[in-house]
Image (cartoon, rainbow, N blue to C red; front, side, top):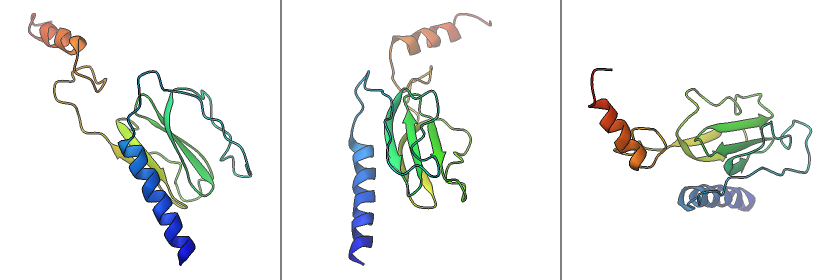
Length: 134
């Protein structure tokens, strides 16, 4: 029972960390993976870039891209690597033994271009909408 409690605490801490840790602009990167790779859990698919968060299951791995999509690889006998469509707007992820989890972000009010930031580009789209029938 003690080892089960540790796993649950580690998973909970990892999820909370992923939810609360802000990603600084330009903090995207590549994933380095090593260790037992019999099911491909350490073989990061190309392109290995623009990741902002990672999660490791028992024999599969997940990566959250800066565009809000999730990449999954490794053992997939239970569909734990089959990210449901639409694969977009994820802000956090977690991996279990036979399952994976993705947290979708709430839309940002006023974000017209979908970059999760309200800025001058959104205002330009708003102006274009009222410029004429085209």
